[in-house]
Length: 445
Image: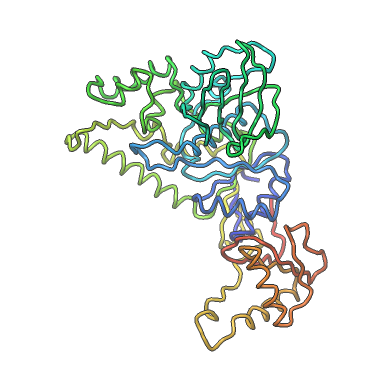
């Protein structure tokens, strides 16, 4: 069986069932979505088909290539939280990592760097407060009056509040002299304790770790590419150990070497979204255009503010390197449309469902009569699920199909609640944009 397999007949919604089945092999699964919207849709679909699965999300920077602004702190926090979990191999058993093409085709700090870039302290032990403050600054945390979002920290006498990466919330450290007297997690709105901690583990807030070796590397790389850094606010700020908005776009110059997301999970299966190749080509075109525009502006001195970009290949892979990243790992390429089975091509058995657009556009036709007829036809061949965007929409739909004489519908939370009998009809809350039909269980590798 080849390492790269095209799974045709995998429309949106059903693709989550295929990922859930891939997870049963016992290894992690990385799903590369075309964009953020597709990643969110997959998260919702997995909630229906794999409600018990551990699902992580690794988002892309919310900036354009070669931007002047930094990614949002919440985005950076989410990325570093995932990289820290993976670098420390903190997850046991199979899990699903959702990401996007933009996130996957960007280099990240090496695993060894992430593993070493942490801070830990145990309650009852001595803790170097000065070292902790230096760590927070170096790892990209921002001093604030109160902590309100990941990346904030606040100092009040012997109390230090820190909002680390991840979704667990902020922590409060109580110091008695140089001893960590207590640690707890709390709700930032109510200030109430949510969890008492025996030990505190902190991860970096940024992919740029602004310590002395990183500053030295940046200065050396900058001078090798562009000579001196006179009158460049970026060069001057980094040389002084100060953060500057947008400095993440020079990430390769801060590190001795970068890795890619797949290096963190070499044992994982990779499942790529439909039409991912076209999106990758468009992404590389955008990167090249942005780089060329920056270089042209620099050469023509059309701006008073210097912008000396890193070469694209130092942060992003070209086509050959991208294929190299994927090589050696099991790779399933999803295709919505059916393709003739053959070497490396299998039919997953799914098809895009019926579109009721003609009934919506024809005022002489009753949409719900057509829907009821379609439900009856589908129930004759197997189980049916009707997906609604909200609880209210599901209640209205239940009433409408009952008025059309459709009986036996039950409210379900996920696929486990759907009755096993052939004509089962379930009403689920699932924001599915387009329906699908599974004609048969496809031949999967």
